[in-house]
Length: 152
Image (cartoon, rainbow, N blue to C red; front, side, top):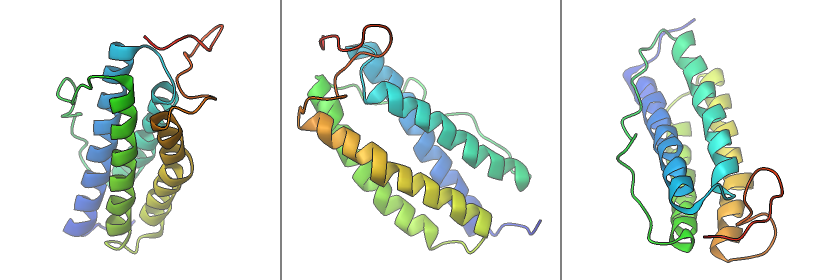
């Protein structure tokens, strides 16, 4: 396997840091407002995103740092504010991935970054937009048996 440039290592570190931040943020929202979608379902996806990046770390023999965001993420005054922050974060992530994709030509890294970008554009952003708009449907439903609970 070819070695990575410092720029490519920075790309992976920045992508992992972004996923770590989301991974730490969503449980805080869940702790504050309950096990409510889209936060509970997207948190599961963020775990898969982290694992995809960690596969690249292992492939290239890179050291993995612990999540620096645990216990350090912003708390929101309301579920609505958390949804709006989710929209803003996914829009920022789209810009982040556009930049990161330009920094490597390695097919395996490009594949992972494109899949992460696709997930945020096609699933995460629309889910947070529905949530921020207060639309009925999946947004605001509690996970688990019985579903459909009211927001606290």
